[in-house]
Image (cartoon, rainbow, N blue to C red):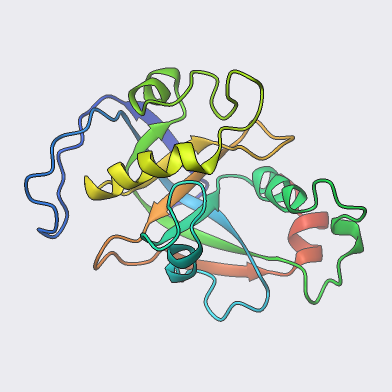
Length: 206
C-alpha cells in the first residue's frame, strides 16, 4: 500500500499511443502531475464490483461521454468524498442524514500505483487543457459542464493518458479528484477495504 494520496506537478507533452491502438495520434500539449497512493471511491452498496468502470463507459460523466470509455472517479480525501455525496442531494428536501445506512453509499479505499496524470489542477495545467482559468467554475460562476470536459477527456484517452487529476467540482470543498482511465489491459487499482456509510461518512476523521 502506498499510503495517502500524493501528487506533484511537472511539464511534459502527451505522446503515448497505448497498446498500438492510436498510431499516428498527434501529440497533445497537456501538462502532468505525478499521483498515486490511497484514493476513495464512493459506490452504491448494491454494485457487484465498485471498481468496474464499464458502467461509467455506458452512462458517461465529467471526463467521458456516454458510450465512450470507462473511468473510475476517485476522491483524494474523505472530505471530497463526502462533498460528492452531498452533491447528490443538492436541491432536495432531504439529505444524507435521512438515508437508510444499509442502502447508503459505501466507500472503497483503493491503492493506485504512482503514475503520470493529466494536470487539471494547476493554472498552467488547466490552461494547457483548454479549460477556463476559473475551472471548475466558468466565467459566469456556474460549474463548467460535462459537455465541455468530455472532449478533453476523450483527447487524453486517445493519447494514452492514464487519467486526469482535477480540482473537485463538488460544492463545499477545495479538494481534488482523480479520474482513472480504464485503458486496455490496465490492471484495476487494488481494493484495500470497504467501509459502510456510518463508518466513513459520520465517524471517520478527514
